[in-house]
Picture 1 (cartoon, rainbow, N blue to C red):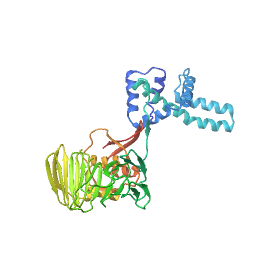
Picture 2: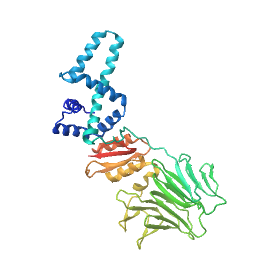
Picture 3: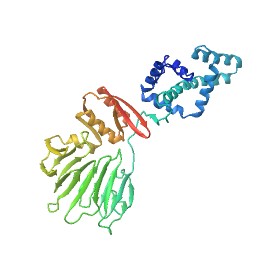
Picture 4: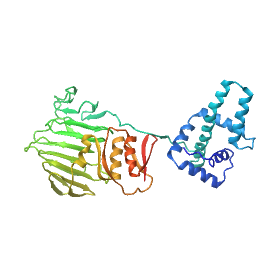
Amino acid sequence: MRLTDDIKPLILKFIQESLSADEQDTLRSWLDESAEHRAFVDDLLQKEELMRDLQHWISLQESDTTDWSDRLKSRTLTAIHAQEKPGYIRKIKRLLPYAAACCIALSGLTYMLVKKQRSAPQNLIALQDIEVPSNQVEIRLSNGKVIQVSSEKGGLISADGLRYADGTMIQSTASQSDLTATIHTPAGTILPITLADGSEVTLNAKTTLKYPLHFANNERRVEIEGEVFFKIAKNKEVPFRVKSRDQLIEVTGTAFNVNTRTAKNSSQTTLVEGAINLSANGKKLRLKPNQQANLAAGQLSQKTVDPYNYIAWLDNKFYFNETELSTALQLIGQWYDLQIVYKHPVKETLLYGEIQRTRSLAAVLKILERSNIKFELIQENGIRKLYVSN
C-alpha cells in the first residue's frame, strides 16, 4: 500500500470539497495505480463503524489550520498528559493506527464519489494465494438424475452401473441399458473412467464427457468438450468414435489425447500409439504415432510432435517445453479456475520446465516470475482474476 505524503493532503481536501481538477486527477491516478488499493479501501468502506468514527475525527479537525498529521500528534499527547493513566495510554496507542486507517479509507470514498460518481462499489478482494480447488464431480443421467461423486477414490468404472474403482456402487443401471451419462469435471480435478467396453478415458479439469452407460452391439461413440486422454480397448468389428466440436475421430484400438481448449482456439489431437482416422469439414487425415492434427478455422493440418509435451497433465504436471506464455497461462487458469487478464500486450516469452499441479498458485507464480513476469491476483464480484504484465 503506497500512501505517500502528497496523497494525504488531497484526502483531507476532498472532504473539505476543495480539490482542484489537477488534484482530482492525481488522486484518481493513485486509486487506479493498484488493484490492491481499490480492494483494500473497498473493504474498509464496508465497515460502517469505521466510517462513522472517521467523520467524527474529521469534524474535530476543521477549526484548526495546523497540518493534520501534526494536529493528531498534538491532540494525542495532550490527551495522554491530561489522563496520566496507563490504561488510557494503551488505548491511545491502539487508536493511532486506527486513525491512519481512517485516512486511507477516505481514498476509497474519493474513488467512489469522484471516479465512480456515487455508483455502488465493486466487490474487490486482493488475494495472496489460491490452493488447488477441491470440488465434486457432477454426473447427469439421461433420466434426469444428478449424482455428485468424489474424484479422490481412484476413478469410476462404468459397467452394469456406476461404481468407484474400489467396488463401491454409486448407481445401478442393470435394468436401464439405454441410459447416457454426462460427466463434468470442475477446476483442479482429474478423473479416470473405465467404460463398459474396457476402454480407459481420463478427463482433465473443466472437461465434459457424454457417453452411453452400455454401448450398443454395433457402435461405440462418445462426445467430449475439453481435454481427454483415451486408451481404447481393441475391437476391429466395432470402431470407437469420438465426436469433438467439428471433428470425428475413429479408432479400433489405440492411445491418443484430444484437447478442444487450446490458447489459439483450435482442437489438437495427439497420437501416442496405434493409428487414428480423423475427419472434419470434408477433409480426412490418418495419424501415426508422434503426430498431431490441428483443426483451426475449419482447416485441418498435421505435424510431428513429442507427445509428452501434451500428456504430462496425466502425471498432474504443468510441463513447459518452449511453451508460449499465453498457452501456459491458459493451462494455469483452467486448473485454478482463474480468468487471465493482460494489462497490456505482453512480450513474447517462451517457458521451460515442469511444475507439479498439486502446488498452490502462489508457488507456481513464484516460479514463473523468474522469467520477469509480474502477476496481481484479485477477486472481483466473485470472479478470480490474474492480471499479467512483463
